Image 1 (tube, rainbow, N blue to C red):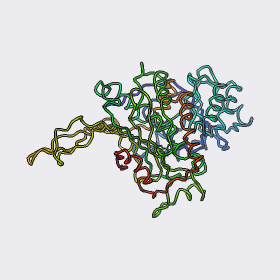
Image 2 (cartoon, helix red, strand yellow):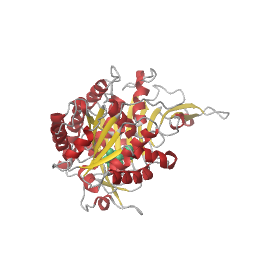
Image 3 (tube, rainbow, N blue to C red):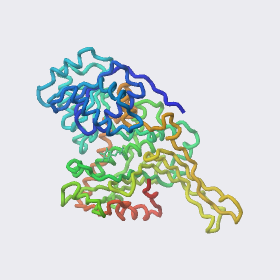
Amino acid sequence: MSVKIIPVDPFDLIIFGASGDLARRKILPALYQRFLASQIPPETRIIGTARSGWDSAAFRTEIKTSLEKYIPESRRDADSIARFLTRLHYHPVDVKGDKGWDALVALVNDTPNPVRAFYLSVAPALFGPIASQLSQRGLRTADSRIVVEKPFGHDLASAQELNKQLAHCFREDQIYRIDHYLGKETVQNLMALRFANSLLEPVWNAQHIDHIQITVAETIGVEGRGAYYDKSGAMRDMVQNHLMQMLCLTAMEPPARFEANDVRDEKLKVIRSLEDVPLPDIVRGQYRANGDSASYRDDAGNPDSTTESFIALKVRVSNWRWAGVPFYLRTGKRLRARMSEIVVIFKDPPHSIFPHPEQRHNSNSLVIRLQPDEAITMHMNIKEPGQGGFRLTEVPLDMSFAETLGDGRMADAYERLLMDVIRGDQTLFMRGDEVEAAWRWADPIIARWQEAEDIPEPYDAGGSGPDGSLALIHHDNRRWRPIEA
Ligand code: BG6
């Protein structure tokens, strides 16, 4: 299958926080990949700003090193990197003060391109100040875009405040709130699977589905982000955003059109249908040292921390489609494998005509795997081939994506999302009311365990999470799919 490149207009992308980790690890490598795919028109300018007192030459040297680190060897050569680097410019700016702004304005306004996007890869406390500088200094044009990264607030009140500050300077249709999970190929494929096939829709409901599992397991720990993470924990860092988006796309009604506001309206309805989660349906965990792996408390530099590095929740979507179908969510750090998947487990046939123990069958399940090895697999029962009686066995109907792609490579989420910003397509970005609704659901849950002074259950680094998370689902006579790569 060949990969189609849809051209975009020449653009100016101004990155605030260009010397930071996200810019080096994700944003610039993603732009390089799009450049290599010939999607970036020659007039395009990528303008970095940050406090570091570099000039454009120093910025290019820094980014060259990052590309050599984050782009696989097969995708880079000295000539392509050199050509890409000529698109890069840099101006130091003190975003809270006056220093550097005039030079930035002069650079941006010198032969501007048709599309202008500001990417705020900075702490959320700077969103408001930067947005108002952009508008006061006349950098914001009628159709320029502003892109903001998570965390979008710490709770409902702070998210509302950020929305207010952005709305002061930009219209909602100019604001792109990134949740990079929405840019993952398989997450988008979930919509294709559900809404471009007539086969699944009739069984996609409480009548046929027993329960749904959503797992995002990571092997990494807090990796130098301890100060941020210890104030957030898995609920704020992962559930309120990434797992919530996966849940929404799984549970939402078909939108009338595949357009930004139609899709986001349907996701919002799902979030509004979420029931509050009582304490017995929440299991929080914290990894302890195991072998060479340090404990969460050591990694986070807080010996008394009660922040969860793992959480499992039993969530209910209270509407006609999903009444009585539990959604089990779990995510954690330092688990035994890196694995993200959505699993839909179907109900058993109403009557089994295969009574013998060796004819036992597994429930049908649809596994939508985001990473690693993106794939959608339907697990079915068939007769075990050959002689020797009539036994049932499970076989996977496999749709793996990697081989079907022309260049044998799965594009990173940021590649898709950045090009959508330039195209002006907000479908894969969160709307302000959606983010607020997600906090409105999460806040009372967090408050509940804080009031109860809940202490997370320890689990071994490199394991499958706390025993309590197994009990949560076993209690309902169900079991998690194993965490394995
Ligand atoms: C980020 C979280 O949003 O997502 C991190 O802040 C987490 O804690 C990361 O590690 C996971 O993303 P991915 O794409 O590696 O699954």
